[in-house]
Length: 101
Image (cartoon, rainbow, N blue to C red):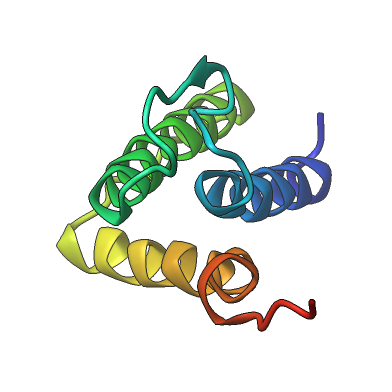
């Protein structure tokens, strides 16, 4: 897999993973939640876990291509903020969209 394809794969996967907690009432899209609706703190916890999973996949792809570059806290701060921005459509759909009816 070349660098361009793996980069786009990670970006697409990050966009899907960031919106998953807001689009599904199941925990991680698999486990049914026993309450009426998932609480917001659980959605944030899911986002953090999915951020870590996407980061691990990106780390594995980078290490398979050759040199793995060391990352410092700035990298994680920027990618965390990007992950939050990618989750905005799901947040709007869940909490800000007005329901007609």
